[in-house]
Amino acid sequence: MSLPEGLRLPPYGSATLADVLPGAATALGVPVRRGGLPADPLDLTPAVAGARRVAVLLVDGLGAELVAAHPRQAPVLNALGSPAGTLSAPCPSTTPVSLVSLGTGLPPGSHGVLGFVTEVPGEGRTLNHVHWADDPDPLQWQAQPTVFEQATAAGVSCTVVAPHAFAGSGLTRAAYRGADYASAVSHGDLVAGMHAALRTGERSLVYGYTAELDLTGHVRGVDSPHWRAQLGIVDRLVEQLVEGLPEDAVLLVTADHGMVDVPDCTRLDIGAEPALTDGVRLLAGEPRARYVHAEPGAVDDVLAAWRAVLGDRAWVVSRAEAVDSGVFGEVQEQLADRIGDVVALARGSWAFTDVQQDPFGSMLAAYHGSLTPAELAIPLLAARGRALG
Image (tube, rainbow, N blue to C red; front, top):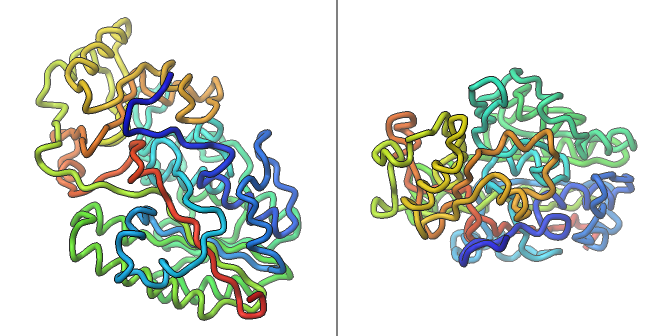
């Protein structure tokens, strides 16, 4: 099944976020295994040549189109080289899915974190992957080995430097297990923590994460002075990371997704449309990537209703059609029920909110989750330590 105009299929196994850590680890001599996918499809080995230490910084919400559109606010980012061009986020283009794709080197259909909020099959409840602690068990819910586990087994010192609030969370264990976790409480702490971690061991792989740009975009919009000011702070953070790189280190900068502003005229409140709630047992996903679980026997009616109401505002398909399209990569059979009976991915700047169930989330200025170029396109930028040139 082909996608409608304006939506793109993530090129799994060739140029997605899931290919970054496997490529970096391969360049450090790790024999990465990733379910039959090539170990280094981005061919990062030349970019990392001679390095014994690789740092990967993921800036939440730093879409490639947004970087290119703001050369004044982000001169350092725009001056960095790009060893593999623009990459793609996975589907849905949302943080939990992307972080686990990065950490495992696998598409969502293989690792099973398939949305911001998904149903726990057979239990009639949802799992918010950002607010996940230990139920369900992260080692069972996401059972694939991570790149960090493989790198640690190969003798590489692996460290994750990320906010203290995420230490030990379900998402952290699903995406980053195998690495030591170093808590960061500020941007300066993140920079110093990554520099310190890079100097451990004979070979090191360090991952850093910062969330404030994404939060600012959600609350204020990406076309706002607030977002542009935060981008300038991110640019300075990257500059400090580059300035303090060990001589035998390489820094890679990437993101988990882009973002689009959603004006009032392209919002639809699901709860205000009876046709969108009839026969619906559970609503999951997020405003630009909805998973709709139907009452027994109502799947066809729910699919027809969502298609009729949303029209060309979204790509609305059955679970089987979504899986067959390849948007999640190859989906393991035991994971498919985490996807809704009906999948609705927004087109243009549309968002499908749920004001009654999620009033705060329905008031945000910008969203992501779907498959538009603005949401999918993410950068991969590189800087090398002084001794590497």
